[in-house]
Image (cartoon, rainbow over all chains, first blue to last red; front, side, top):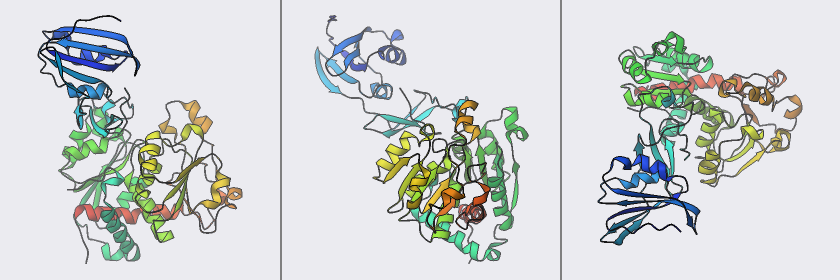
Length: 140
Length: 306
């Protein structure tokens, strides 16, 4: 197992579906954040077989709950003074705008470019989002 | 102001009131003539339609109102690239109510967000077609006398058939509905409908490919056309278009009081020899659609007749 040092202050985004870390890295725009970031891909997981992990060192002001839209099964470990002070799943937002795109070629958003892609939470249990226009489920 | 974008936009009480009003209009249409005098219905049809557009126009004319609009995207500003939201903003200042058909799913919803007049979805792609659902419900209620305790068979294209999806969504709200879903594997109802509507509400249903076998169980047989415009691949359309054809031979398995409904247009999925069977009510269904649209227009415009 690859060892990456522990954090003093920051967040560990754990249990990311294997292969999904880069999407989250890009979404959070971590490249432009002034903090240390470690991306661990294909780490062994007893629960998932393989998983990705992102460790971010430094104070975080980002809305991390939105990450649940991209991967509802990931977990967030908030670290302060070298200890996990909070461990939780993201609270899925009821509605998201401009984060994910509707892939239905029959949806009005496929022809009217100025329309914002907007989804509503259809099932909290399944982490399922549906396009508010055509009701197509978002497939991750 | 109320819009009707999905059949479920109407509460059970509103639905019941509209069906009762449609029944009153059916029994005494002259009483309602002129009640929408001075009101204008805009029919914004971005794709071809005969029945729905003419039915809406007949409904408004029967009420003494006027109609204006277009019947294809080519003859509207959409051809110049105008957005749905801009079109509806302008039309809102010309008309009192609008019916919109659009090939893209969600277009009438976008219109409703920007509209200052009631918007009725007259069909958006493979998504919703609430006034067809109202027509179907009114037909069943008028000819069967009730909407509960019914076994309804849906046959043909259950994957893309928006009328099927909408009617299933509406019928699960009535007690003791049961569904028999008859289609080839490629055209089965979408998973979300099976899981989130039928199974989530514990509604009994059966999926089959054998129309004859289930025929004796049915109170209603809702036939659908395999629609060419819903396929991206013509080969798939050709392979599946003749999957289920209802003919006189199959009708002998049906109950005496079973009703055959079809949203029309029919291509060849119901043989013309079935048309003379008293159980074939699809042309009556089209006629009843005018009355229920009259009731809907009156309701959305807030017009009552004592």
